[in-house]
Image 1: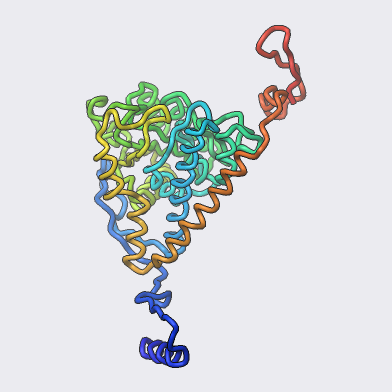
Image 2 (image 1 turned 90 degrees about the vertical axis):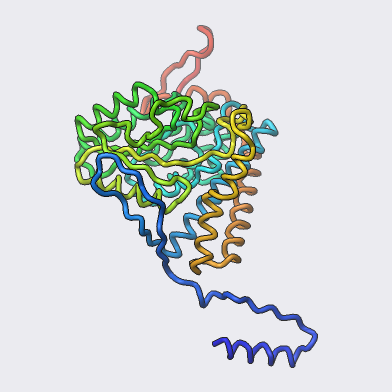
Length: 390
């Protein structure tokens, strides 16, 4: 094949001696349909065995994961810029650095499974099926936002996705309630309830572990451990930083949250455990956030800049996946670059739409209070102001 290509090039050069020809060393003929990787070791609690460290991924799935993570990263960068230019107001918590968590877990779930998370919810809103334009429009408070611009950063919802919750740790017992409903209905679906290392010390979290195990609810409790609860390092906040063991009688495991394939396999293992009727499981994903806790936090007063730079350089989930795919011929560098360009164009267009979209009229604030409720009178901000809900 190479000799044929060489003859073709020589013939073209002879016919067009002034032309310049570049021959790629690796072409699409070298691309494979799937590849196998080895993940880092999983830490286990009350489990005789855990997920396999040998992971196989198809080319289509690998490119999908890469595009999804790149979309979240680009979307969060755009959100940060919109916030700095005061187009987005209020609270805003970015997911940059943690993309492998949402993308990896979603890859192991079905659309019928249920998810509830905390206020760092943009990435999860996207993986649950909401387009970036509707997420960005929600952040800018516009009409086409996923919650009509009423919820903002912390309150986004979708199919079998319950937000976006602003009260630290409160989504964990709500997730157990969703799992209780699934079990009550005889469903084979699971609920994923996510929280951070800061929320892991909440009393309600431990109460939820207890009732979930007592009733063997199909709930995966996921601790997205990014190393810092606001500005406090985990070592300064928790007597035990092995969050996957903190359920005591609830089995748990810890996975590398910067490796999308490791997260996928860990979630698949936990979901199968729950679907088989064995009760809940705790999954800790060790990850890292590049930005501050929120937009009011520069993120550098409690950790050195060198730490962030080192994580970006050596542990970035997007760069890591790109290098792995190219190294085993699952994709070419040119393909990955094209995905980057396509994602950038998509997000740039979404930003312009989110800025141009109209805001809701004032009367809309009286609506969406109850589901399927006939129109009724709602009091405004004082006893003399009323509006009709519809």
